[in-house]
Image (cartoon, rainbow, N blue to C red; front, side, top):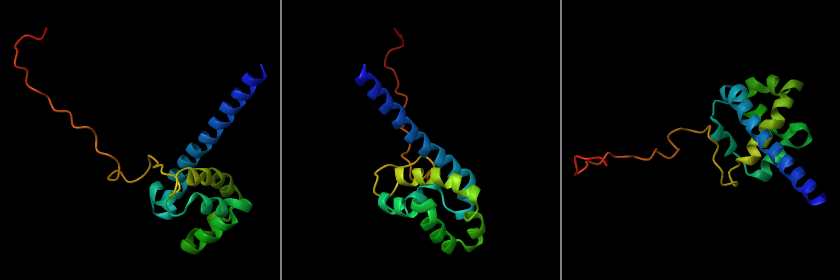
Length: 130
């Protein structure tokens, strides 16, 4: 019974971690993409997982400082307390898909994504289908 409880807790906690990265992707695409003028793939590829963790430590002070310098017009927005609530999830998104993670988010440049499989219709040599 204890093992079942432990397994269930692990599954619940792991799904919560994934949900935060997904929520972060949505927040980035809705609130930050326009402000930073870069898509999600370009954004997450700026740093490694360790670098993102450092930037988002201490209530995101490193992130706010770096991006306030990069985008001075957005400094006021980045320093708002309500922005931090969204940045926590954006941080999970950035760490999940960082340059050294080997993962590619679905919100990147569509030209980078794999082209769809090219299915060709082949002529049948027989007039009967069955």
